[in-house]
Image (cartoon, rainbow, N blue to C red; front, side, top):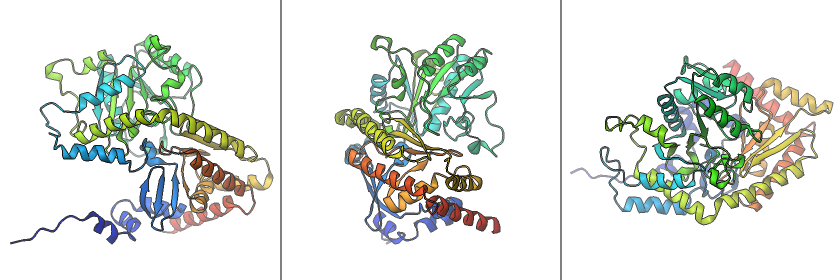
Length: 475
């Protein structure tokens, strides 16, 4: 009789502890592994908690990347873990296929209560790009139009539909024809928007209230005026809050910073569709949601025969609905939005105060814990030489001269805000403290200060990356 061995995750992790990046290189993505080694981001993280990562030597790192903004209650939140355990212990009738999904209505109800506007229904998906695809489908059915307008630098995901409205060429190149009838316009340009909408051929205008690539802010009245233009021309306005929503900016929805809300509560505009994801997952189980006006939803699910016109296999599974419910519950209990607003203001003020002494520093901007630090070409001749050298190698590399020593010397993990940008973005778990902010501010001050030295990290990083490029060219 064959004996069955138990699955042992700890044993698997321990047995491969020193081969993590090698395994990734061999069986997943060798170029990604090469990049990590080149820029010094090949740290062997062993565990995580709250706003921190810990390497295999027990050293703590402040996480300002936050899994791309998915940890509203911190990494490995015990509250979310408990909620998942509860769901598993209850042995719920998960994914009945044809049958009632036990928790979907509850999470939809909570989201509709929070949404700043008069919305009627929620469609659930798994990832953010899936939700964007669903929103595009809804807009096309509702308007009986094909056209889609999106903004330069807008990022909405990498499925073929979402990629078609993503304004970053580096993600689009090489995939051939995307969705037809899509038009890119500048962000914050109402004249360009009106020119396109006045053609009467566009189903939707999709826009991030705050752009993730660069953390670019709208002008004060941009979103309100865009909403009015969309209404005037019969175009659906889709607000993509996948990254900036669910507390990231110090409000439940980033659009609220710019006047979005119910008229009876002082709101001056609202989109037709909200798309949210990332933080709704609690950092555990992917979940996304399309929050739509009733009439748009009815246009899609117009009859019993069309009740399944849009669907996906795992979208309303009990674990994803559970983490969504638990995330919203504990964010309310902890007053997470208020905490984020306070800590975010503290971080922005501290960075601005300590970095303004440096000529490479341009500005700090953001709301809550979505913060950008932007740099500019210096005036001093020696510094300009270093700046120009790095930019000649690659327009995206200057920030690595700051990010690499921030990680290795100060143990702060952050990211470049986008291709060909001199902007560092901070999107940490929403549990970040003021004490953490002090360390981040000090790390920036020390590292940016070192970049102002002719023997500093800007030159060192330039040489290292130049050497890496030469090795690649000779392979």
